[in-house]
Image 1 (spheres, helix red, strand yellow):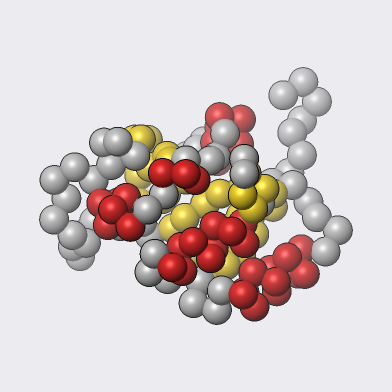
Image 2: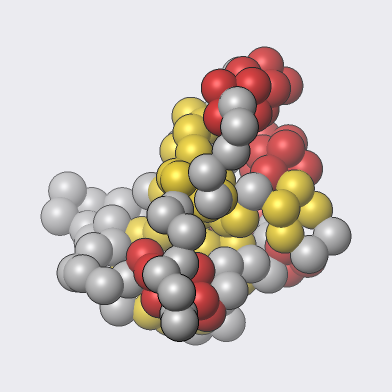
Length: 130
């Protein structure tokens, strides 16, 4: 299920024991999104980095936040720091193609944002013709 941030969590009264997991996707483009949504999974709420605020987080109550390693006008460290300021302490996953030293990226973000559960999702390069 995919919904956008304008309709996110309308009327939701909070996490219950049987809530559908929610993923907040920040600036995840259509090509990257198509590679992630080939199977049933959590409700997906799409948003832009510039619209991410405390109100949106309160409405969505994400179980997971995903974003590209480098987005338009931000990188994953900017997003992690913003999420920390907004009080988010859940998992944050950066979507990226293979990196020469993924451990260095993970260590840098975890070092700056100790309250965030950060890791990378390494996407295989697109197949020729995709």
